[in-house]
Image (cartoon, rainbow, N blue to C red):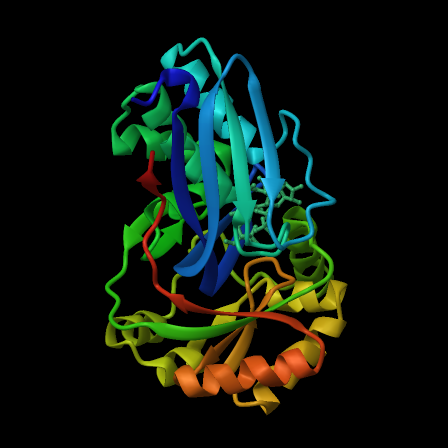
Length: 310
Ligand SMILES: C[C@@](CO)(OP(=O)(O)O)[C@H](O)COP(=O)(O)OP(=O)(O)OC[C@H]1O[C@@H](n2ccc(N)nc2=O)[C@H](O)[C@@H]1O
Ligand SMILES: Nc1ncnc2c1ncn2[C@@H]1O[C@H](COP(=O)(O)OP(=O)(O)O)[C@@H](O)[C@H]1O
C-alpha cells in the first residue's frame, strides 16, 4: 500500500517553439501585445512531487543548471506556493525536476516546470481544481505557462497567454541547436523596442494588432513543412541576433546543411531548424554535431502537461 509519506506524483510538460511571433506595442504593464503560433515539441520537463512540510526543488538533467536559483523565485516553487495559497493547503512539497529544456533558452522550460508542478501538486494534495482554474493560475506565473499546460499547437495573443487551439496535422521534424549561454527575455524585448525607437518604426500602431500569418496556420493545418519553412517568422530574432551575433552563423550552418529554414525560438538563443523529413533531420543533426554544436532532434506537436503516474 502507498502511504501519504511515500507517494510520488510524476507529471511531464513539453518545451515549445514559436513558429510565428509578431510583437506589437509595449503596454503600460511592461508587456507587449503579441501574436504567436506555439508548437509543443518532444523535449520534456519531468516533475516528481512528494509530500513535505515546506517547499523545495532540486534539479537534475543534461542541461547547464548553474544559473538556476532554487529559492522562492524559481517558477516551480512559485507554481506550488501559488496553488497552496489559492486552495488553503497548509503543507509544502518536495519537487524533483529532470530538466531537458535549456535554461533561458527561449523554449519555455521554466514555464513547463510551472505547468507540470501545478498539475502534480493538484493531484498530490487532492485540491482538485478545474482545468480552467489551473489555466488561470498558470497565466499569473508567466505568459508562456498556459501554453505549456495545454500543449499541441495554439495561437497565443495578448501577452501570449490568451490561447486558441489551431488545427494541426502530422508531425514536423525539428533539429534544435542549443547555445552554451542563456538570454534574458526582457533584455531581448527591450532591444526590439530600442531598435524601433532608433529607427522611428511604428510597426504596429496602437490600433493595429499583430496577427499570425495565415500561411503559418495553413501550413500547420496541412502538415506541410515546406510551406511552414517559408513562413517561419520571429520579431525577436533580429534583436536576439543583435545581442548575440554568433547565432547568425548557426542559422547559416543549418541552412547550408539541409534545413528548410532556421529560426530563433522565442527570445533565443536556441535555434530551431525545420527539416523536410526524418532523413534530412538526421543528416542535419550529424552535420551540426560534427561542427561541435549541442543538438537535439525533436518532433511536434506533442501534448501539454499531464500526469504520467504515481
Ligand atoms: C518570448 C517568449 C515567446 O513565447 O518566450 P521565451 O523566449 O521567454 O521562451 C514569451 O513572450 C515570454 O514568455 P515568458 O517567459 O513566460 O514571459 P514572462 O515571464 O511572463 O515575462 C518576462 C518578461 O518578458 C517581457 N514580455 C513577456 C511577454 C510579452 N508578451 N511581452 C513582454 O514584454 C516582459 O519584460 C516581462 O517582464
Ligand atoms: N524552473 C525554472 N527553469 C528555468 N528557468 C527558471 C526556472 N525558474 C526560474 N527561472 C528563471 O527564468 C528565466 C527564463 O526561464 P526559461 O523558461 O528557462 O527560459 P525562456 O523564458 O527563455 O524560455 C531563467 O533565466 C531563470 O532565471
